[in-house]
Image 1 (cartoon, rainbow, N blue to C red):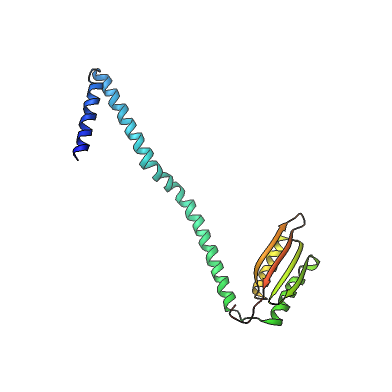
Image 2 (cartoon, helix red, strand yellow):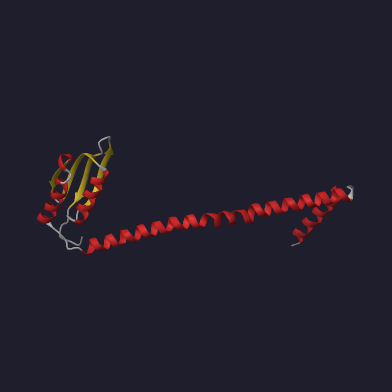
Amino acid sequence: MKTWSAFLQSASAATSAWVGPAAPRERRWAAWGLLALIVGLAWQWTVSPALQTIRRAPEQRAQLELQLQLMQAQAREAAQLRAMPTLTGAPALAALKAATDRLGASAKLSVQGERAVITLDGVGSAALRAWLAEVRSGARGRPIEAQLARTAKGYSGTITVALPTGGPA
């Protein structure tokens, strides 16, 4: 505490030595200027950040609400998929083939054990999205690898799907 009071006393003495010879009118102007500087700094460091936070709060809340709704929808979808009976072997493969056949000539299916590789050539985004949803819900398959490129005709590349093996889906 002694160092702080000593600092204030020396600052007061220095200010008095600097302002002392000035006229009373100049001292008032200096005091008003100092007060304006203090108020400006206080505004910049305390009030302004708080106001910016308050202004951004409704937008951030809306974004968080959208994220929450999306997460809840995904949780409901996951619960529905878990509740569905497990497909294994031939039924799962038949459902995967049926989904792939709906893509027409732009998709080719090759099965390698418990995995299937689908080669795509110019599949539209809506068709790809519908195919993925059908593979997940109908065949209970899980896409485990995708190497896709977007071309002028649509998506081209390969998707590797893990077929269910009989354990919990």
